[in-house]
Amino acid sequence: MTLIVGCAALPALAWLLGARTRRVGWIVGLALVGWLATLILLVAVFPRAGAEAVLGSLLGAALIVAVGHAVEDRRVGGTTPVRGAGLRRFSMASAIGVTGVCAPLVILGLNTDPFIPSADELLPVPAGLVASVDRTDGTSCGSGVCDVSVSVRSGSGQPVGEVQRLVRDHLSARGWRLDDDGRSCRPAGWLLDRRTTCVDVRQNAALVRVTIEGHRAFA
Image (cartoon, rainbow, N blue to C red; front, side):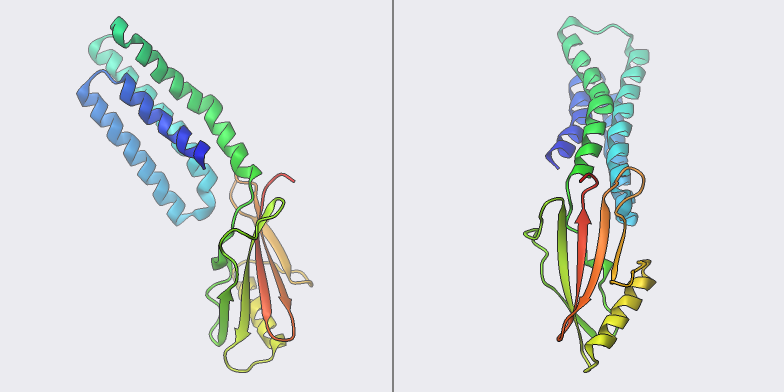
């Protein structure tokens, strides 16, 4: 996360240091804010697009900065006072660095770390069932995987076997293809996020426990 924040801040810092005109400076600054807001909205609507949004924010911001410099060159000329030449070179180098260095590192780092999955993969449960989330604080992260455990009971005296059937049917309706052992996995993201989300449904004498796992991409 620190790497993502640092890389995302580079284009804005680069523009702040390298801008030469107030008008273009404000326009490009607002464009950077608008681009970031658009990607945040995209992730809110399509949560699985997180990796693509991160990459898009970095590449798009670098492109906006580069276009801003090109527009300024046309408006005030291509020459830069010696005093500001160093800042301008740093600005352009930062934009190039975001494109060529930060973006691959961010995607690699994202896929290397496991993640705490959302209990919303299961919740809310069907009517008549009662669910309680046992772990959500990240202390259940192990080697390459984090998990959230949800206990499901009947609220109307149904046997545990029936509760398990209802839970399985509920997960199947949400796109999970459970095998005979009650387990299923699917990609956590789209093209760039290669991590995996898994669910595992087990029952004991008193309840049904659903474990939701967030696996890193690389073992």
